[in-house]
Amino acid sequence: MKNFADNPHLTIVIPTYNEAENLPSLAQILLNLPHAPLDLLVVDDNSPDGTGEIAEDLIKGFPGRVSVIHRQGKLGLGTAYITGFCHALQTGAQAICQMDADFSHPPAKILELVGVLKDCDVAMGSRYVPGGEVDRNWPMWRKGLSAFGNVYARSILRLPVKDATGGFRVWRRATLAGMPLERIRSNGYAFQVEMAYIAYRLGYKFREIPFTFIDRQWGTSKMSFRIQREAAVRVWRMLYEYRNIIA
Image 1 (cartoon, rainbow, N blue to C red):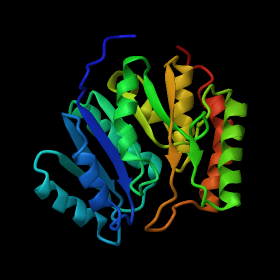
Image 2: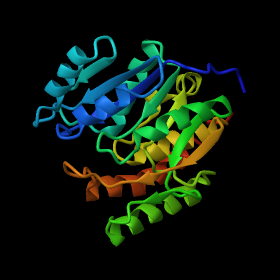
Image 3: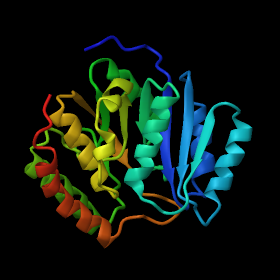
Image 4: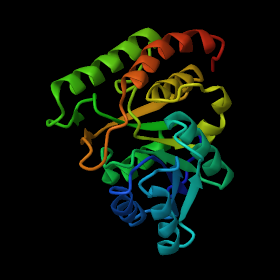
């Protein structure tokens, strides 16, 4: 494992669509974490509720620490993250965090994830390792769907991780730079599985850190039947598309 800086330049990438109720508070917490240098990149899909304008105000409140990419419409989670990852790499980030804007991923865990990058290539917040859990207030059908989705993806792809569908991760710069981001086609929650599978096929080392997933308190969930169907079908296509990618 190559040497990794004790205090890497950390960029937190957050895709947003209608997160006006969450973004101001989340940004305040993230930008006051005791880590430097740390900056925030918001990738907004032309949110009708004004999330993009709120992000612009954050630039004024935190000069030099917040960037915003405004996209022309609701183009999807996968392309939002790819856009954000590429921007973070271009602007010198040494560690790149991906997380949701709805407080389902605890900001307090970010520094722990960054810390374990000394011994791995990608640190993953995990709901399904000992010590991790999902919100007890989640409906049983949501818990069942999440658990089944993980077992389904891991079994088909033989992924050696417990939380393949989770979106709370911190990547080393070299890891993301070494991945064929231009080939990724998933644009819903299957994106998380595809990223993990490519990293696994390339021989990158994972480390899972337990956390408690909290259901959003404000705003509306982006989960839909279309997203679930894409994930179910896309997993099988990954097997074929990446069969020749090996470390």
